[in-house]
Image 1 (spheres, rainbow, N blue to C red):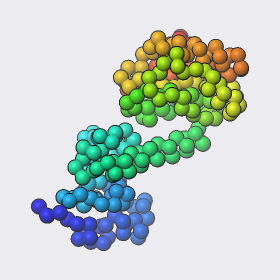
Image 2: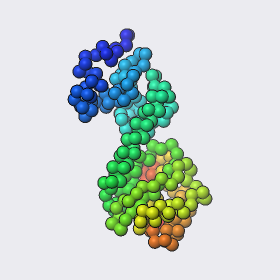
Image 3: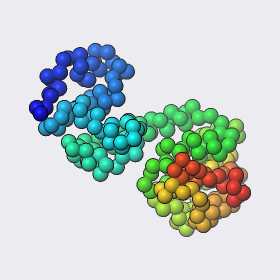
Image 4: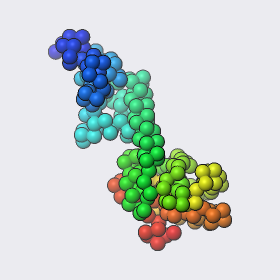
Length: 231
């Protein structure tokens, strides 16, 4: 079957021209992606290739999948090489950063562990390695800053409270919450998690920054140290 070239389509059906004429808000997810990736493969035009990228997970995730795919995942799509794969990874990362910055700017006052878990769940439950983050709060329990402490295995022997507390003092926080994920999907805390929690709590109490909780994110599940009586 001969490839349908983009220039063979009626002008009103070409994503780029449609964007210029009517604005990006009128484009479908596939059309938006086609404008960004620009070119297709030998067998497909950019719109057809974009639709296959959106169907990559097989679960209907669509654009959300770009937040979680690895380079290998993307390059498994025929027509996607390392250059296009890297471009798509950057789109996902850019979206994540925009979302996080906007969320922080409009952050509500968190009143319970469920709200914190909901805030991080979709961003962290698909990660292939552990990340530990710290949320810093003001006196009204509103989020001041989200700080990435470590990426990789959470090991209490190499993660020191020092940098956590330096950042807390820098942003004038009075409270903080540790948040990290378990790539296995099981959020049950390890001994290393418990040791880290105890060390951060003790160090924070010395400078007047209270450790309010430690939330461990699993796959659509979480454990709160405070709710579990571990804090």
